[in-house]
Length: 242
Ligand SMILES: Nc1ncnc2c1ncn2[C@@H]1O[C@H](COP(=O)(O)OP(=O)(O)OP(=O)(O)O)[C@@H](O)[C@H]1O
Ligand SMILES: [Mg+2]
Image (cartoon, rainbow, N blue to C red; front, side, top):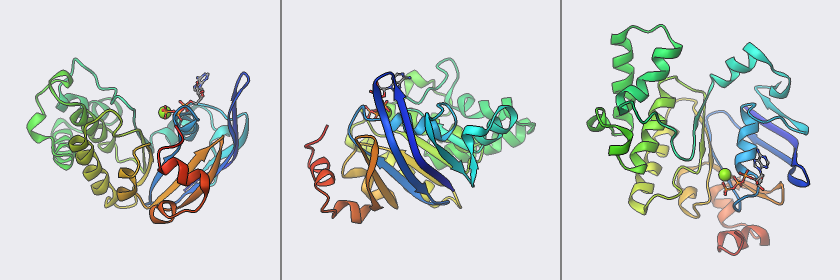
């Protein structure tokens, strides 16, 4: 569903992406791993047109998003949900209001329909009890789950996560992984997850690719990557590249 072909991106002299090629299939749960500061978030931004490549292409269902403008680009973005590292919730709205927000802004659903969808998605991430709390009153992991529920109300085809577990303790990380596992069972939902949580991430994804020096140096099933004999991958898994 997503095809990245020979993607290059430079910031001044900093040649971050140096020919990334990668395919993400519809319905799979995919993880991008790699050392800090090496371009994972930059790559993610290219997937929804927030950044334009210097060279190369990103195709979604065969269409080059670099060529899309205006309404067409907006329609494409509506097919993606993004969960940013810090959740990016509205602090002055309750959990319930945060999740209802995109439905109120972007759809013509009645209040009763909105209520039904919001309750369903809050239940899916185990947050019914927190509906009336404000973001400041809940934990970091809960905030992330709210951000996921807020994406899911819009029925995205693809959900993008930038570091879903960074900065969270192991128990809360587990609750996030549990949620990612559940999403994996959502019909046809494609998830693309950036993570440097090794080995945690391997349990919850179908395929993994590793970004190193601006290129994909390895890709395969989680098991293949864990058993890889590529020295760069081995070093990274042992915590020797960071
Ligand atoms: N808008 C920008 N302008 C200039 N340089 C940028 C911009 N965005 C990112 N960079 C640079 O691109 C490089 C890659 O950044 P990126 O945020 O993609 O790293 P990352 O792999 O996501 O790291 P982390 O795992 O720490 O989140 C860094 O050197 C960063 O300084
Ligand atoms: Mg990043």
